Amino acid sequence: SQQGEEDPQALSIQEGENATMNCSYKTSINNLQWYRQNSGRGLVHLILIRSNEREKHSGRLRVTLDTSKKSSSLLITASRAADTASYFCATDASSGAGKSTFGDGTTLTVKP
Amino acid sequence: DAGVIQSPRHEVTEMGQEVTLRCKPISGHNSLFWYRQTMMRGLELLIYFNNNVPIDDSGMPEDRFSAKMPNASFSTLKIQPSEPRDSAVYFCASSSETGLSPLHFGNGTRLTVT
Figure 1 (cartoon, rainbow over the protein chains, first blue to last red):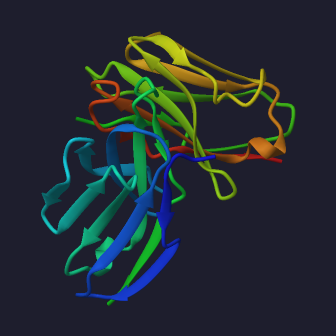
Figure 2 (cartoon, rainbow over the protein chains, first blue to last red):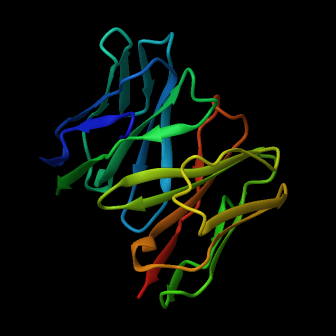
């Protein structure tokens, strides 16, 4: 089974609203990454947060990490129609020798 | 930088045929990963290389699948013989430092086996 699990599976919001996606994982990690995938394209890296970090920002993105709960959240503020995509979390397990394991993703639809 | 380049973008083949997928990683990256994406199973890691050496191939489904990396700028994933259940999108990704830096994905090869 996958290391990470995203929640919700699908999210539909209006342009301008905030979108929050959650990721839970099972084992100790070195870092956690969030990726975006537009239809028919490869995944694009958004942000990486290390296990000793609790929060990270990049533009309209805010990622939090709670290692005690083995969970992370991705917040997209002031969403735009162009944010419509699938979002995946990926974890590099402490024992995983550098391989990233992906969750099933959250499909975000931002309506104009 | 051209990014990770995969070819072909689409491949349609008949069951039993050999299929070869190709990948050119980003220059200077020393780790290369092959993933497979399906609706049912999501994104699965098949194999990854570090400095052209296969490190973990535990995700390769069966002996019909093989991967090579003859040099730092080229890798292939071969399926022989192909089966309809191999239909998926196959992604190649590279990174500059395994486990410490993000993955850069190609746009994938959509494989359909009839």
